[in-house]
Image 1 (cartoon, rainbow, N blue to C red):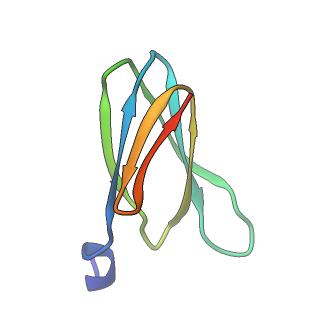
Image 2 (spheres, rainbow, N blue to C red):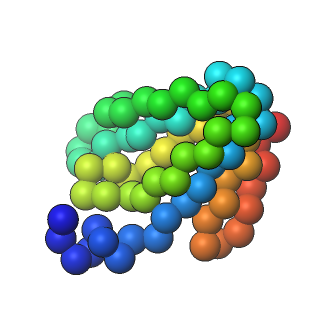
Length: 74
């Protein structure tokens, strides 16, 4: 792990219902799906952006917490 990855901010996703999809999108000239997780109600995922992940898509009811604030996806 390089130092830039180790110092990246973490974000938290808490599922408010069963079946919340968290999808990681790649960096580079072609943005593609590269990882997917399914969370059930009250499950929490802690993640961060890396050299491979430039964006995250959340589908379903969830709370997303970042160093920039909290977003409720309803």
